[in-house]
Length: 51
Image (cartoon, rainbow, N blue to C red; front, side, top):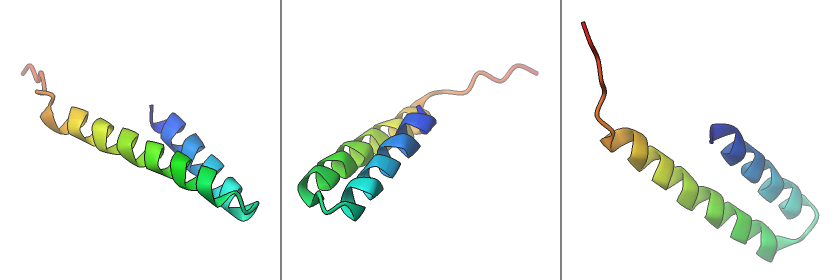
């Protein structure tokens, strides 16, 4: 999942360099939404630590 986020961010950067601003903003927004979901998933999942 993390590699997908990095790949999408790289795509957004490349699109911005090539002056495709609207598509770049859309890819960035999708990446941001997925990042927030992934953070929420990890922040609320209980840890199963067995000692």
